[in-house]
Length: 179
Image 1: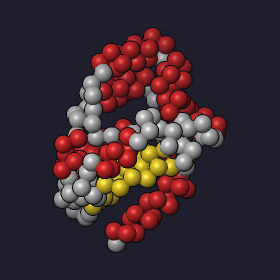
Image 2: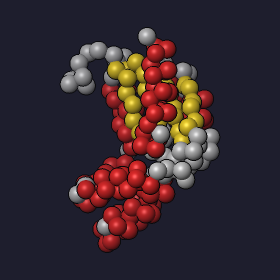
Image 3: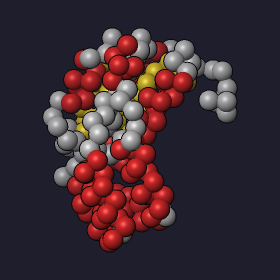
Image 4: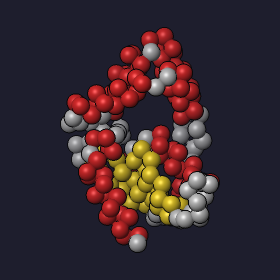
């Protein structure tokens, strides 16, 4: 926030980045002009068994076993193979201890449902139509005072990777309406 300065912010986050975007809004609610959550949720239900199983798999067998189990299935059925390959390459480039630390932090994050439901600023929720539970993004948008939901067809969890042009058009339209 110090680096961003005092100007109004548009904070956008995909997946765990959405959790980070919510944290920025918590820290500077008067500075955030628009919160965009892509494939993200405010709520958090602790699942220690799931977390521990993921950490054990990573520790025992590394990304070679964890990627196809936890991350690869999040891509939509029509995602370009090159995009999945690039994401895989990126995931494998990270230090395994850092990935495991990220899993611990992600699974230990606070539930921000109450904050998001009471935040008066606009929240744009974007979700691929093949991302997890159908309707969860729409339910989040409907639960907030200034929520809006957009579903991106033929897309999984990684809208910015799978459909960057569609995402750019959605953001241009929403940001344009704020000016």
